[in-house]
Amino acid sequence: MLRISGAVIVPADEIEVSAVRSQGAGGQNVNKVASAIHLRFDICASSLPGLYKERLLKLSDQRITKDGVVVIKAQQYRSREKNLEEALRRLQVLLQSAAASPRKRIPTRPTAGSRRKRLDSKVKRGRTKAMRAKVVE
Image (cartoon, rainbow, N blue to C red; front, side):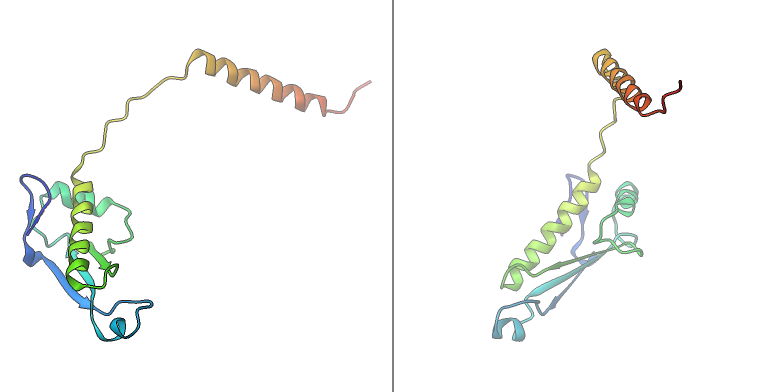
């Protein structure tokens, strides 16, 4: 069970976890022990509210496949338990980021000083270009 917010909970049976061998250096331990965790979470088949599903599928996150499956591989630690905790924590953070509603943008206007400065720079640039023109006699 993974708690996302006060009302939203992801049951453990919706999260598919498998242990695989880690990559990289580590000697005999890395060659013999499957300590890395490969976590898969199907967004469409989950019991998440529709709003969460929509926001997750709209995210441009490399961990989310085209089919709407979140794939997380945790191999930072040498123990399987710590890697499992890390993978679940990453999934929880991802789901919580989808839960947060984006702030409404308040349109702003440029200040009078910035407008004046912009126009002055345009006039200066125009003068510079005019100096490059051929002299007509």
